[in-house]
Length: 197
Image 1 (cartoon, rainbow, N blue to C red):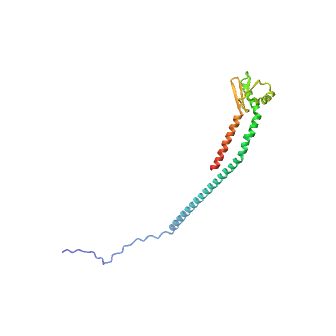
Image 2 (spheres, helix red, strand yellow):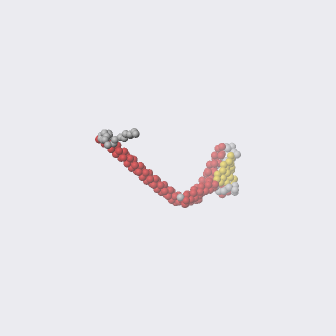
Image 3 (tube, rainbow, N blue to C red):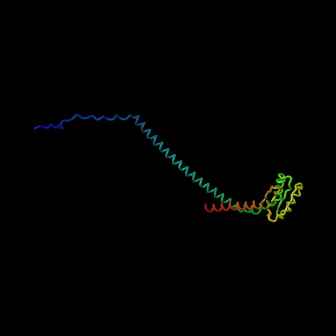
């Protein structure tokens, strides 16, 4: 029979030496602690700056919104107060001004046509009620060869001035009507925008 030889564990073994870590250098410890503290301080400062920026942005947005609301509110009040004034001007004042200057406008238009059509007489067609005012203006400057013709189809603010083949139309009534319509549309739009925000 063969015998197996088994290892003997009873004998003491030589102890393995474990390498002891070198003690850290005090300078390295301080440098590492400084860098960690610096990084933490930098992170805190960046977070504080981001928070301040977010707060300032929110405050600025709120201020702009309040200013915008105040502007639109003031504009709405101003237009609400000016609406009746503008309407009165278009309905009463402008027609009087237009009527007062109607005869002069017709004569100026006739003179411009006379310059381009020098060899032809100028014919002015107006409603019968405008004839006296035109004759008064023309009487002040009799050198212009004008022929005034009554035309009952024309309104008080309308005139047709012709010389040869050239013709000009003066329509103060149409202009005033267009101004009235534009003002009404504008005021209606403003009123609707105030109602619907």
